[in-house]
Amino acid sequence: MASKIVLPSEKIEDEKINEITEWLQKNAGQGSSRYGGQKGNVSHWLQGDDWLYYEEYTLSEDEDRAIDANLIFVFRSEEVAVQFALRFA
Image (cartoon, rainbow, N blue to C red; front, side, top):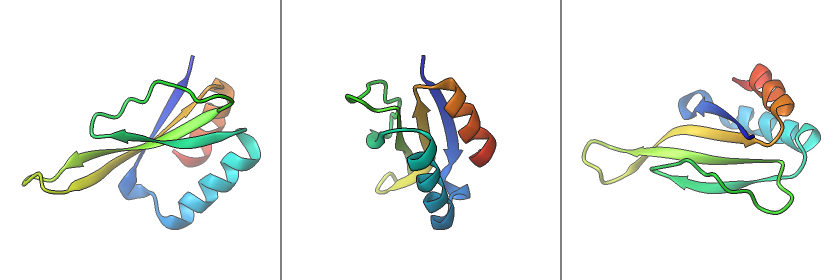
């Protein structure tokens, strides 16, 4: 069963993204990004992936542009998900 960690986009700076990327490469195995879109909820795995992430977004009030809402990380291993959450959430 996959474990999902949600990080609000407004709390993630470029510096933190670099730290997250480094940690994932060293500790979480092979992974990749997906297109989640407005509805989000990516539920499929690509061959060999141990984790994935995607951006969820909402539409602005006038609905002419997307606003980032959350960065969603999904892990196959609950143990790795817990380590990630303790470090970055």
